[in-house]
Length: 226
Length: 99
Image (spheres, rainbow over the protein chains, first blue to last red):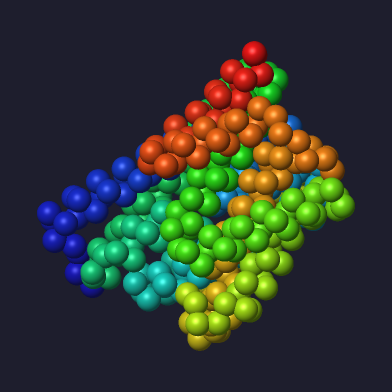
């Protein structure tokens, strides 16, 4: 394998670090919201270290805070993590990894590292983009999670600062890019209807898992779509 | 109980990532599997928005959180970055609660 040409190398590293800083910073909001939801600083940091995929982490604390069971919370987090398996399929041939390297690289497989590698034209470029972005996000996401958790502890009552509203906004922001696809907007509308219908009749955690059922039905029916 | 959820999610999410690196593409590229997995984040994040903003136990309520969501929508339409959207929603809800 050959190294990327020096001028491309610089720009790939800059891009990766830029994405790392932007993504890492919002770890602050995760940290603050997580302690606001009743998790300890240690539990909050463990989530960022071990789960390390933003949507799953926010989902887990949201389900727990609503009074959902540990099972519902973990199931929700894992179902949201399934998209990373699809990213792995796209990224694996670009990285050309084998043996133990795969086990380390897998932990860095997230939205951002995927986006910054699939757009590259050669294997060395894709590899550099993946590891710089994934590494930068990992270090900064965990650092800012800790800072956010400490800040959240100092702030006190989360409702005074609207931290509960911040969680809904975080989900909407994570959802937003998906809504560009018209077929997905239909799925979102169906999910709104189902969630509104299920909340009054089911225990906490179930309305979110009902979202999975919507995805399942939409995927089975949506033949010919993406 | 919280630790159990954290550990299970950590292990599960890691194995999902590793799965993508390890299985032959044909398995996961089955059209139905692909379509369902592309729709999971859409449907579940939407459900999470609804529960987080309008849910209160088994009741549906409209309170300061809804104002926060409206602010977030406006900020997203203006292409604001993630952190601005989240902080904007929090501040909006906090201000409404002070009124």
